[in-house]
Length: 435
Image 1 (cartoon, rainbow, N blue to C red):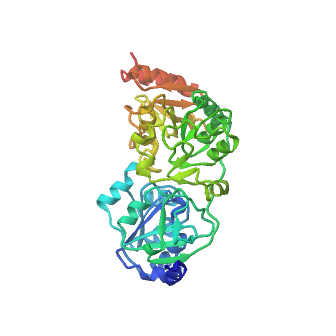
Image 2 (tube, rainbow, N blue to C red):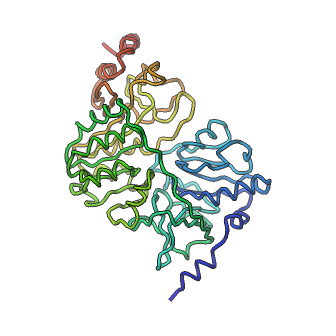
Image 3 (tube, helix red, strand yellow):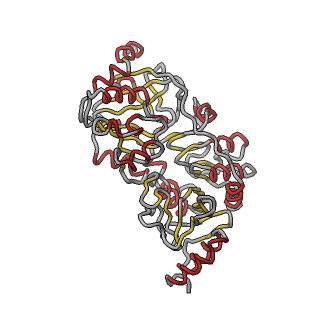
């Protein structure tokens, strides 16, 4: 019988020693959020800062650690980030010209990795090894399997604070080339303050959601407010990209029991989790949550198999055609497409399903309307006019799917802030949108 403890200790090293094995020109891969390896990355940054590395690239997604290669351009050319969905420091770095960005739908990333990429090392944070020699990938399984299959080496960072996901991806110690131990509390997403506008929008959406529905919630105040407004519902299910605190609350109060789902009944399905310690404690050793690869979880043909599928996501602006921008302010890069369109399409294909894109009607203290005659020049269209279903602001709901351009414009103007409705009506008529 293999002594897995001996095998583990034979591969155990320090972050600095592991970083010394990395060579110039390497490409390293990491999965999203809490799957990332802060100790290994900091050790690499130290080497790069001493001019011992050049041309090393690190692929990331939804960064929750303050990686040095995204902080400023001092390491540019030595150690650079390449983001699949930039946030935080990656957003700053992409706009600053010292990090790169890969446009993609979240569901497509595993396939793109298998088709186009090779990795000198896959780096991943894991929970402590079990008695059978397996590490749990804890909160994240989105594209780790794809990276693992294309990596020449596997470096794991073991953190005792990582939960053990029993229905998530596992890596065996025999697959690992080096192990670093780094015990540190996991980053937590600061709680979002639910203002009056968010609560109003959340209530409007909740009214449209029947008992027994299956939900996907995005990130931010409006999805959280919607989650809180669903606490009076019954027999809800969860099939979502990101597992959130509001979902744990719905499970705790009994509003979610996953009993009406057509696929994975009795289970909450996600591809990654990020939020408070309450989420991480919920995941730990819990067979009722399945953390599965994103090319399955976010596949619209999978999503739609649950009846009454409801998706709730955000936007930065929408034009009178119904084109949704959720990832840039004009030409300023803010994020990626993520899984928004995956769930818009999946929900719309579901029997009884609905998709909601929700946002406050104005920005910058009420001086800018988020409903616009045209998208800001340079803005990225995330969800097309052909896919969009419901648009929601604090002034109501506009149901665009299946409606004409003139009908869409009238509905959108009706839910715009009153201060901008006359201007929007004038622009719509000038452009021949409204008859």
